[in-house]
Amino acid sequence: MVGQVVIFAAVVCAAPFTIRLLGPAAYGLWALLQILIVYLVMADLGMRQASTKFASEAFVSGDDVGEVNAIWTALAVTLTASCIISLMIGLAAPWIIDTMHVPADLRNAGIVAVRLIAVAAVATAVANTVNTPQTVRLRWAGLTIATQGPVVLQIIAIPVALFIFGGGIRVTTLVVVATACLAVAANAVFAGRLQPKLVHPRFDWSLLRKYLGFGGGLTVAGLASVPLMTAERFFLGHFHSTVVVAEYSVAMSLSTVINVIPWTACQPLMPAMSRLHATGDRENLRSMYRQTLQAIFLALAGGTIVLGFLAEPFLRLWAGPLYGRHSTDPFLILLVGFCFAGIGYVPYNYLMSAGRTSLLAKIRLAQLGPFLVVAAVLADKFGAVGAACAWSGEMVVDMALLSWGVWHVDKIIESPTPARWQVGLALPFAICVIELGLARFTDALAVRCGIAALLLTIYSVLVWLVVLTPSERQGATKISRVILQRKARRALPRVLYEEVAN
Image (cartoon, rainbow, N blue to C red; front, side, top):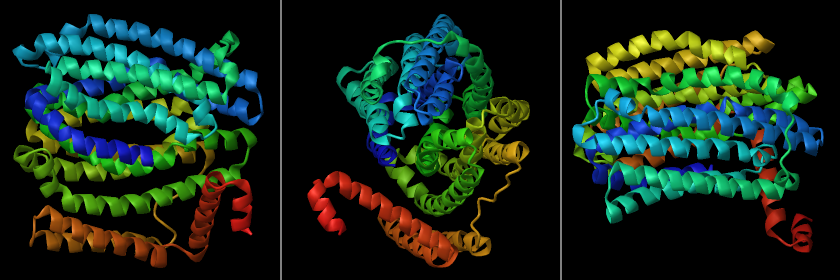
């Protein structure tokens, strides 16, 4: 959570300078290039998740050799596949830039930027596999420093480099390459400390077929997921301009702040659920699935109504009047989509930990055709608002299909709403109505921040007192006590800790 909050703080501080230094057209191109790197990272053929799953199974049984085999075999496939795909993208860079309708004065710089992004994608894919020892041990401090630290550095360094060196989009992508390589080095250091045997490469090619079977379905699902998540931006660039893409991308970038909650909660799910699947502990598996769903719902409901209340004055101050006018409506629509996407993380991780990647592929492929048609039509007719509607609608459908997938596999069907669902739904709705009324009387950001803080406090207190059941409050209190005890044990000398504990 700390890592995600720091990233968001870096974005809030640095993005206004990046937006202004690049200008609307170049910033729109930069937004599209960020999507391209997501596509290219998928070229690892699902080896990041395969490495996590199979290394988790080896770790829980105490098999160090099996864990090292799992990581190095996945890394070999990752490096080979990502290099081949990135080379192809580099050769196709002129065609890619031409399909984006990039202005003529940005064409040459855009071609260079695509090729640099291809290099950064290889490094990112390698870093995502190298960090497996941190992931399977749930060692999030080292993982956060090594993986998200370079991301924070990248966000801050981009406007600084643009100010000092100029160079526009080429300088931006050079910074991305440098920080991606830094992430590889940092993750390798932490991984080597946790699993010293990793310094000696070991490959078990007999595992390759199993890996490719798992990763193949995941790759298909991933390749389908990227256009499901991003195609509307390319349609905006094709039917309108990179300026409209920039307006939409600002709304998308800011709305991802709500993604911090489910992303943080679901990070440990894949290795934790893989362990429970390996030991056959279905009772705790189902409990983990249900409790994570409900916790994410309650947190997202509160966060969404606060962000929606602050949207227009914050966008106007943060990105400029142009974005305040044209990005607010897409932002509000995208917030709803992110709520459903966040809930969908839980069944997605469940299916992945169960090894049902082929079902994930089928779910994503089934949505791809209809979404592309709907997104193209809405983006063409209604611009950024239409694109936001298409994307958010897709997140609703995706969450429903993933939940169906969990029921299909293990006959588990759980609602994200809490046990006292009537109050759980009525409370955020009531606060939303209050905010809509108050928004008519003031658009000053400072005043709205004060109101939002007060309403969020009221929401949190009422969730604790009215929405949660006594057993849920008792469980949350117990978890908090355990966390505080562990932190005290690490922070205090052993003798002093024992005295405090007694």
